[in-house]
Structure formats: structure tokens, C-alpha cells
Length: 175
Image (cartoon, helix red, strand yellow):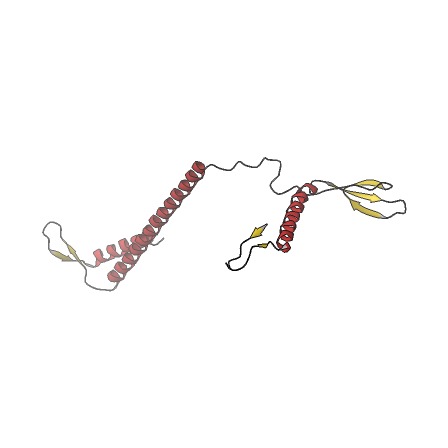
């Protein structure tokens, strides 16, 4: 393999041998990683030699007694007895994306409605408390007569009734 230098004055030189070694190392490591998955499915055996020496291996050498340990290697990731799912097509992924976006928008709208409702309830509570404070404060309260349009001042009995109504509004609004 040859490569061109960026310097136009220099000649074409061969690829340094270190680059070829790097490729070989990467290839060897990837083969090792692939073979590790197959080893994970093998059984672990106890091998007892004639002198009593014990070794553990996937296969016992000749002249040793093989005993089952009941230990199995772990299965490779993703192989829990089900075949791997087929990759989704572009149309399926697009439909799933659109569905997620619609669900997200609906959730945002729901949160906005809930926060607006909470703000209205909080404002109604504050208004009811302010009205109760005004009724209890001893100020002269007026009411407009619907027939004549004139203002009429509340007497003590009407003030007590308004105070009870204000307390009922607070109980309703401030829960």
C-alpha cells in the first residue's frame, strides 16, 4: 500500500508497518469478542487428575475425571429465548415519532389547563378572603337595588348574612 504525502516535493513512500499491525490487533480483538459470546453458553466442568489436582474447564483433558458443577456460562446479551426484533422501517419510526410528539403536546396542554385552573382557584380564594375581611372590618357596605338602581346600605342582619356567605365562599374556593 502506498500513500501520498501532503508535501508535493516528497516522493511516494510505503505505508509504515505499524499501521498494518494496528489493523491486525483490532481484527484479533474483534474475533476474541465474538468468540466470548459462544463461550458464555458452555458448561463449567470440574476436572480431577489422578494425583488429586483439581482444575476447572469447559472440556477436561485426557486422564482426568469429569464432574458436573451445574454452573453454566451466561447467555449473550439479548438472547433471553426470544428472537431479536426486526429493525423498524422508516415509516414505522416516523409514525412512532409523530405519536410521541402528539402525546407530548397533549401533556403540555393538560399541564397548561391544570395550572390555569389552579391560578383561577387561587385568585377566587384571595378575593373571597378579601371580601370577608371587608365585611368584618366594619366599613359601610352598599348594595345596588336592581329595581331602582340606587345604593342601599347593609344593616347588621344583612352584614351577618354576607359574612356567612363569604365564609361559605372561602370554604368552597380555598380547598
